[in-house]
Image (cartoon, rainbow, N blue to C red; front, side, top):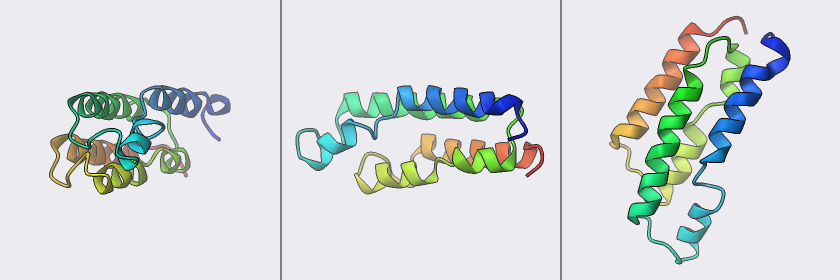
Length: 108
């Protein structure tokens, strides 16, 4: 890793995981204990997407590190669970933020 011992990447991952709705809440949706349209779940998901965008805005990532932060797989799970639609502004914004981060990344 070209960042200082991967500290930027580690900090970003830690920050993102703290508010990740997939860890427990999506399982609740799948088990029928919570609805995908639940206001609390939506609020947590919105907050998580904002935090994710902030993490992606940190300077110093390599393209390799950013591939580890690609939000697409997690967004796909949220989409499949019915929490987010393809047209959701937060989903669109997060994908765009990721692409911008890739374009300004240093090295491979």
